[in-house]
Structures are given as C-alpha cells and as structure tokens.
Image 1 (tube, rainbow, N blue to C red):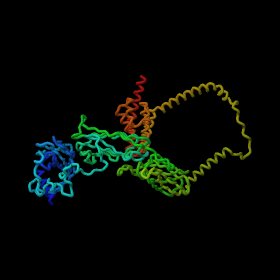
Image 2: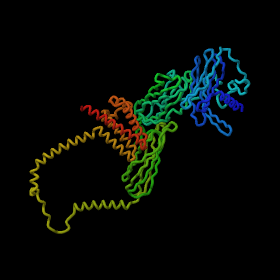
Image 3: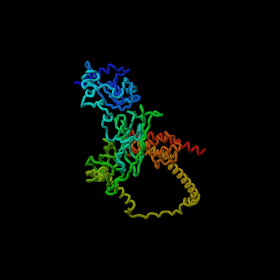
Image 4: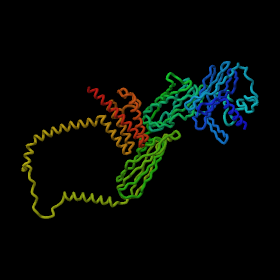
Length: 640
C-alpha cells in the first residue's frame, strides 16, 4: 500500500509541473535522483513517457550529453497505467528511460531536455540544473526514514525507499556501477571486443560446413556505442548460390539490448535472420550486409552512418556415397514423412482413381516425387499445394500432391509404393520415407471389352482382304497392261529433263527456305518470344510453375538476343555488371537480376500460386519487350 500511495503522490506532483502537449494527451515527466552531487559521483536522470489509449506509442528517447560528463544509457523499461475516475477507466502505456550521468568538473551542470518521438513529432522533457561540488563537500547521507520530500515516508530516491516496489521492478538508482544494472541478454549477442569505436555490423552462421540442400541459418546484428539508434537503410548480402527464406521479416519489432563490450555500454539489435539452402558444392560466399544508422551521435556527411559486415564463406559438399540408397537426388536433405490415400478402391477397367500423397518434414521439401511404374497404369501430372516456411528458426511444413491415376487393366491391381530417399544431417545417415498405395479392384468393363473386340475384328478384316482365296470358278483376271503400252508414258518420258530441272530448282528453294527457318528458330530473340508465349499459355491454364520456368527461358534468350551474353553461364551477382558493360541501363539490369532471382527461388519453393506466377510473367513481358527494342536498335546501328 505504501508504494502504490507513493506512486500516486509522485504522479500527481509530476503531472502538475508538466507542460501540456499540443493536440496530444501524451504525458512526459522528468525526475533526477539528486540535485546536488560531488564531482565524480553518479546520479540518474529519468523520463517517463505515457500515451493515452489509441495514441501513437512514444519512442526513441534521446538525451544530449552535457559538457564535462560521462553518460551511460538509456536503460528502457515499458510501463502501463490504469486509472479509474468517476466511472471512467483511463489506460496509458509507454516507457521509462534512465540515464546514469557522472560529472567530471565542479559547477552548475545543465542536464536536458531529453526528447521522445510521438508519431512524427518530437516532444521534449524539462531540463534540470545540478550543483556539482568538490569531493567531500556533498550533502550528508539521508536518514533511512527521510526522502527527498523531508519526512516523506515513501522516500522515493533514497537508498531504502524506492520508486520501484521490491520484487517487482529493479531500481536503477540503487546501482553505482551502470554496467552492473544491465539486464540479461541472449548469448548470441555477446561480443568480447568491438572492431569499431562507434558502430559495427556482425554476422553469425550456425555452421561452417554442410551439404547441398541443408539449411544454413544466417543472422546479422548491429551494435552502436552512442545510445539507441534508428536504422536508415538495410541491404541484404548477395546469396546467388543459395535459396533464401527469411526467418525474421524485418527489424521493426526487434528488441534492443544494452550490452557491455570493453567495459562500455553498447546497444545491439538483430536486423535479419535468413535460412539459406546451398544449390551446389564448393566454397560458397555470402556477401556483405550493409546497414545505415541514424540518430544523435551517428551522423556523417550523407546523413547516415553506414557500416558493412565482412563477407563469409561456407564449405558445401555432397552427402557421402557410402550407404546412398538408389533413387536419391542431390538436395533432398532434412527429415521427411510420407502418407497416402487412394479413393475409390473399387472401379471399372479404364476408369481413374485419386491418389493423395502428403509429404511432411523439416528442410527444403522437394516438389517432385518418383512414382511406381507398371504396365497398364498411367499417372497424370499432379496438383501441388502446401505451406512451407520458418517455424522456430527452422524451415518446415508440408506439401500435398493430388494425382489422377488411370488403370487400364482388370483384376486386383497393386499400385506399388512411393519412396523418397533423403539425407538427415542431424542423424548423419540416409533414410527413406515410404508410402504404400495398396491394391485396387478393377472390374472388367463392357465398354473396354467391346472396344477390344472391335479392334480385333478390324485387324482380322484387313488380313482377310489381303490373304483371301477365291470361293467360285471363273475366268482368270487379265494381266495388267505394261507401262510402255500406255500413251501417257511416252509423254511423261519426254518431260523428264524438264522435271529434273524443276526438281533441282524446288530442292534449292526448299533448302534455302529451310535454312532461313532454322536461322529464325535459332535466333535468340525469336526463341525468347516463343518462350514468352509458352509462359502466357501456361499461366492461362493455371500451371504456374511451368509459366515461371518458361518466363525464365524467355529472359535468358532475350538477354542473349539483345547483348550477346549467355546469362546461364554468368553468376547471378555478376550479371548486373555484365549487362551494364553491354550498354544496358542500370535500372533495367537490376530489374532483370531481381526477376531471374525470383524465378530461381520459385523453382525451389513452389510457383503454383497464381498471383506470384502472374506477377513474374507480367514483369517478364515488359523486360523482353525492352530487350527486343535494344537489340533492334543495335542492328540498325550496325547496318547504318
């Protein structure tokens, strides 16, 4: 009861001295632990910012460093307040920011005002004046029963009394060493030495060696030594040899941790976490992460303080050959489970049955399954759906394959078993996920039987006509008239030389026409247009994955037709510079690189979502048109 009553008194005093904020009910209060301190003795400057219900949350506390002082912090903690008055409930939420200040010289010390952001507006607190006296001349220690308000029993800033009830909040004013009051932070943020005195970017990989298709977790952290900062720019590293899936989408809601580095207080935030799946073997590089910092103490000529992380490399190999099961495909890495159902189990010969297969597991789930093959059983292309994404830092999920199977045999037909061999890096061994499909009963169909009889009868009729015998007596058939007895034979013979000439002319004309058509077929620009038409046709038929694959072919053909570059032989991060060297403007080059990366990612993560496929095909159409115009202008320039 003592602490709640004391808090009410303090709130009332602070509210009475606070200036009103224009067009806002956000409350900003200021407190200091002492008004008179000795030189070298630390004291605390604290602001509390509380916003009403429905108002933007205050953020970004800032305190200018007073001359001749050392400032640590701020230490920020969230606050909530509920007040009932006249039957009305008022809710407020915000934070308390505390700075620890050590004066280094005697005299009047002006501290503040501090500021916070409320929406897009900056709101300032009160400034205070502290008397700094020589060592040994400070005020006598207060009695345990006395506070800043004389005999006030609540004693808010006394060593015994506290604004923070014991066991609920830690009192930042009770610590002489600011490093000792730092809250705990996750071990992943720990750094023993700062490579830069102001700010730096650090990256972390969960492993340095892995196999093709295995998940690699990449995380990036930003550290600042001059208080809390804002991010003004974030550029992800180049990962051309990987399929990337974001684990943390952005840093907007990430927590800022105050940590100790080299006996100094720094602020750290995780800005990105990405799951990477390598596509090939070798020593693969992950590029630098570029981050821009802004805020007080983080300025440069451009307005942003930019920092780069060093690039990192990983060693990627294939899973071992020893014990590799038949049918294993490079890249199938993780932990998988297969299940299947067949409906109906009884049908007529020639009818179709539905086979539903579910693939669940951890890792980069494949988009294709090897199916059992048997004479008289026809598997149609499946419909694929599912959800694969990060969960608790690991990419996992499930895919559903819906097959239509046509069975053209009668009797008890065994559909076989679907098998998926995979490498489990956690258990360092190969396993095979299996799903037995079982048997179906196919009844003999009258329709199929009559069709077979008709085909047999038709074949017998043809044979009978060919080998048939005479069934009655009669005159033998007249022998055929020789060609030489026919009058038109000699006329045709006379026209033979003319026929040879016409034939040669026709042959040469046909050969030239074939060469022209072959040249047009092999012309890269024409191939690009054909691939684009295939992509649009597949998109209209709802085959998103085929549409994306055709769009990627169209882009490579169009690039070759316009610039002569074979894009498939160029690494993704080198493609944009090569295009710019070939006189492609930087914006188009960057758009082509991003579009090819989107096609490549869709090929591994699934591309049957209509919106994603439609967006990729639309961008491809515009890019192919731009490259075609570029190629034509170059041809006109060469011919001129």
